[in-house]
Length: 481
Image 1: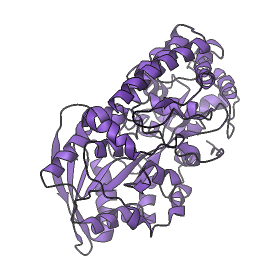
Image 2 (image 1 turned 30 degrees about the vertical axis):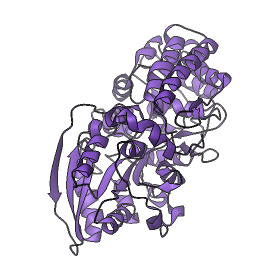
Image 3 (image 1 turned 180 degrees about the vertical axis):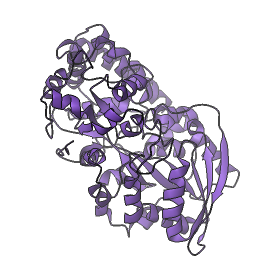
């Protein structure tokens, strides 16, 4: 395994969109529907996470409904965990039901809360109706002090009417140079910071190092679409497919793999704002990306025609079993591969290929303070403790969780070579634009990818179709906004 290099720049808001106005456009959509339309977010925490254990399905779907998470009926429960230190008070923390109890105990309570002498009362809610349940708690007069969700979900919370405290006065004392600028950008709405992350992830090309070695291949610090395709073609053998991706309509992870390819052309996915969203890429830029997908099947022959029907169960499952040599993924392949020791010991990562500039997808888990909390100062102390050097190193040290820190020094201290390689890609990660991406992916992007893979449609024709269908979706989104 080798560490990958980093590319150029640090784009965080490609569209330059003020995100406050976005809320007016989504508030009327309904909390559950809104959450389902936002951009892909981090992998889930469904199991243990010590350095010697791992969650069983982390990353197989996104942690929020934004990326195809649970949309079932609401459910909630609460529990208290013992505190330590000087009895600084009790904080009510709302979080999704998928969060690993071991992580809560080891990191939330025994590290962060203990550091400030606080006790935690944990309230768990169903992920698919998270904004609605947070709003209901607020309406009942019992809002949580701290909300744990994704940075991509902030607009869902505020669109549902959940009052979040602007943290700008608190973060004046924070050393911003110690953290990634994407962390602040992902939580900023019209110039105000409403949340802060405590762990993050990105995307890379994950591959079987033993397959690459057997083929005499090395991976560069950066590569173009064509350079990658030729590399992947040499991994395509009778024993395994060279490269795979998600193209099935409804797949919750596909946007986090498609968007970096579009961003790499130099274009945002959208420009404008609520009621005025416009297509960002030109037809030529869309054609560049459609050509990449076309070439995987028809030119490089590194992917089978059937890849046009694959979703994350196929990519995750085939890779962990060893029948897929490479795909775009996050560190969640670690827990996914626990039952396959040979895959686990041969995990390697390279950058996502690009058209003109290297980039990847930024996603994070963040903490927010409710504006009606009577424990705002204590809640801020908890956030500080979660972002402290000690707790951040604990987060990355739980290698079974396969998560990166938002504090740069903690990632620099990672010793696990696979996770450390992902850390080198974070500087190039881009924060997704705050537009409802699910209808665009399902009704415009994925059908275009299916055209070039399943039917052999030209990239030019697929790009035209994509633009026509995307405009139709934006017209609907703008009408609602």
